[in-house]
Length: 163
Image 1 (cartoon, one colour):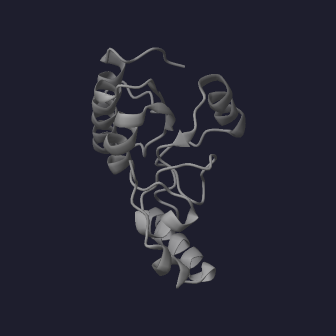
Image 2 (tube, helix red, strand yellow):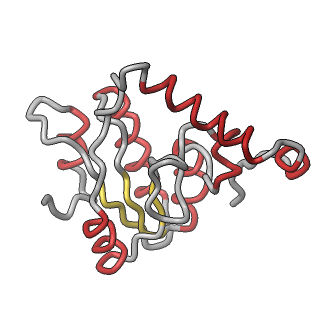
């Protein structure tokens, strides 16, 4: 299945410096002038990501940006600007179109906002339910005792372990 990408001629007509400026400006606006949004998720250390790649054959991050991706394949928030830096587009498009069809092994570290995490878990469970191929997800979430997103994921028949 194909993932949305900007038209080649549109990307080619915009210089590298302009594309960088757009990416940096968008993420700075998202995080705020004093990095108010910088704590929205937990970054995995390089050894942890390497372990996921080695032990579980993780090949793609489901929530990253051109500024913090660890793997060559990743989904990101801004499809139009991040696509020229390797993004596969939105997780919410990628999961039903690619994951649910082709399977694979993924790392999922969504922003730590309860309602958003609920959407992510619902989308992951739908992909796991539909997928005819082997599909695994290393899900990174906060250990919040009152999180419906976390309790839904843990209660799923697809859940295997917590670390």
